Length: 164
Image 1: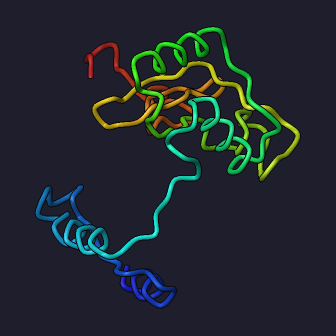
Image 2 (image 1 turned 135 degrees about the vertical axis):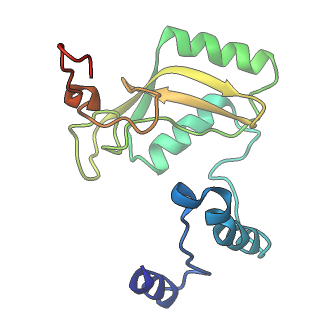
């Protein structure tokens, strides 16, 4: 871990701390929390890829074109209705947080690397109004985080005689 920490610092990281929250609870995350606070207090040149005044579709299409290198975006009828509803409710000025497969820049997990010549499909758009963003669901993806490709329940073994 120290080798990784030193390499990160050598490559320009502001800090690199070991977090043991999984074993030590909150106490194990204290140094990480302090490092995050320190980093957040530094000046930043952050800016969105698009103006927040853009329409919902303009924001989605900018991300699809500039980040994923897509040729265009297709919207399901449900997504079209949601865009109209969120616009009517005044949520259209919120930023986007795209939800798509992590296995490809496209919405097709079998297209590896940085493919081109594809269109992004928007199945639906959900609002996380309290957190302050909209999140389009791209293609056929599960929204439960952290699930492996092969579910672990396949490895559950049950002894029918002892019920263990």
